[in-house]
Length: 207
Image 1 (tube, one colour):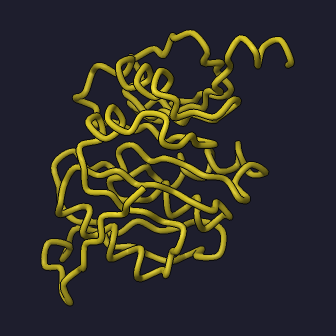
Image 2 (tube, rainbow, N blue to C red):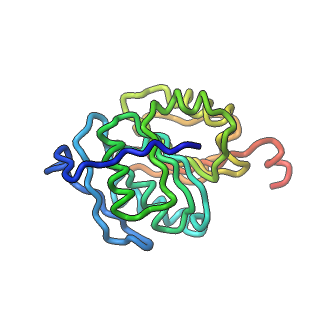
Image 3 (spheres, helix red, strand yellow):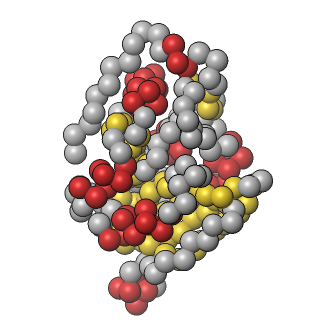
């Protein structure tokens, strides 16, 4: 898997006044990371992240994750801060990918890989290249076809047996696909967020 190296400029003007995300736990607890202004960029809030990372508090150490819509990188860098060994961050916007690369360098986050690419194209063309312990799936809310993303992840072998799948979506959407078992789900305002586990028939027989 080849990382797309994007060297940040000394001063990334697009981030001025755009805001920050704060890492809330682990080795980088309290660190603030710049977030640029970009369409559809919607960082996962502190309270939602706190809930998610508490749900999986014993699962992070040494785990490998795929962030399909990396955006601000809040989920990815939080996972690395708490002990994940690797997070692959896919991001379509070149501006946002530049900031992710700059934040990786700021933290010296060796386990982070930033790839500036259309996620759907990358997932379709790199089938079974690697399976992950978990996937962050937080698409733009205007992307209504959530099932197509889930089918792509399942059918192309991106999930290890018993892999975790974190999904953040508008609260009116429903996840209902074979092999996905709901573990936790909550709502915050108009956002529904939850954890599912990938369970093949073989998994079910040995559970």
